[in-house]
Length: 471
Image 1 (cartoon, rainbow, N blue to C red):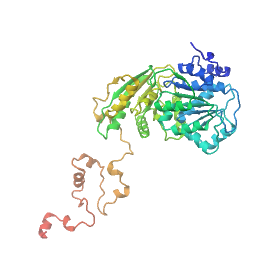
Image 2: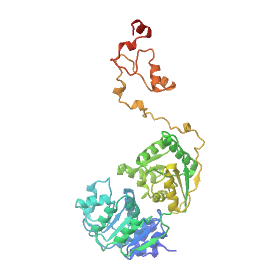
Image 3: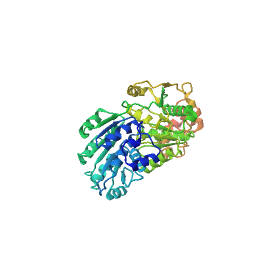
Image 4: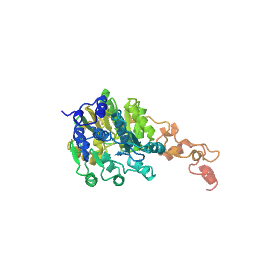
């Protein structure tokens, strides 16, 4: 069996690896590190959670051990699609360079430009960045990429999915053609082949698993949710999520819950907290400091349920996540693989449960086609429960349609006439249409619904008075 000591890595790197508790490289590491150390381009394809990050950080640190960084001219560049993934790569460099004097800078959004510029001005050996922030610094004239010796594109398929192709191509054009290029990805889309054919030179292709496969250590299930009345569907679905969580019992140490929309991330998180679940949201609209704080608390076990959009589907490196719940079926089949890859990491077992509605049938079929197997179905625990039992507690801030009016409009009844309360207990208990209920409540008060001070006097007269007046 191959050991890290067999891979010709720098002794100081090997010491850091040993202190981190690792002895045996994963298949992608064993396959990618040797050609990378030889200076060859590498195209690495492996499912998420298999150690791709160390596959390029370890040889990069060894190769950069000799040499000196110059101001504004980084010696190597790592591109990542999200802030979280970039931060994870930076943590890996901190772990493995503890016995070396290599410098790094992390360029991501949500952080002061001045702080980042100060690091770049000093000169860095490793520059880790998201494409947008990197180009922002370049446009400001604060960064030169002509000294890049090694360039890495991490999670290349996600880069392409997020529309970074023009940025990636431009960044490549700013680096020397003599650079060493490493591509790492979980899937191999046709567009990636075009990019690699353009920018990689005779790469060593290292593929340790069938493209877009999920770890065999992850038990997968899907629960078919038939939906409910339109105004109750969301409430019912959130109740189903809670039932699925409860069904796992004490097996759930922690979990990531994925939603397709950022708005649903907040709604699901608030709903879980309302029912006593220790949950917190994370998505792209939150401040970077808040996202970092939430992730740290999740890693430390202070938060049990992390409700996330796909911003956390990649780059969330918490080896001990026991469960992944897909509140929504992802619209892209590859995203399913990345989502459930948050569990079953580092040789551990994991569990992934997904809720699928009839409208998701096409996306569910695409996922099963990608996996080349059917995901086992779970019985819906709400199938025999009336919808009323899943009704969420009314929020004191919630309003009926009639209460959405400005207060001034609600108080605009003609002077001398009583103000009606459309939410009074009496009006709620009565049957009939809203108009009938209002008429009933105003009976005997001299109030004519729909009329103001301009009301003709004869309308307010009784039948006998009108007959006596000849009307």
